[in-house]
Image (cartoon, rainbow, N blue to C red; front, side, top):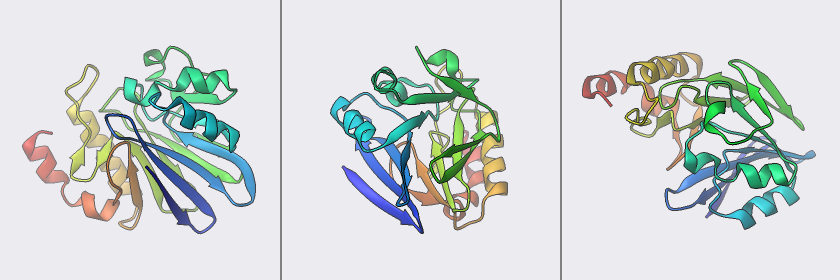
Length: 201
């Protein structure tokens, strides 16, 4: 399934792929051919091929769980530069460069800022698009709560701190695109943090 979102000149194409309904996002602009892919499930190699042919030059991985990185080898084989946080780099069999907190990456006319938001994994990241109220949260924030922290490397207090950071940085109208499921907004989720802490997940 593909959905297209427009934010002024920013084009966000969303693809839902695989048995876990992973969201892949392609960011581009009308004025530039280079595009950025967020996450890389390997469930649809033909889709990855088409995305490379339409201009994806870099892939930014939100975290190193298998359902988000299965397409990394195929992308790298096709010349795409794969970027991952230093904290989650050990979870990948291969990558091209690591990124750190607050690092700004330029792809064509798009500038994105990396925010390291540990909790779901030690090196989970969120990705903010400069000049737009758009945030890609991987498995850190979903509609209705944080990502799971029961996996190896998960840390519930850490993900709570990461959410506190996000809720303090972004205004209520910021659109949140998670790694699975529907989009939400910072405003729709921020007021629920105390309830999430109380329930413990």
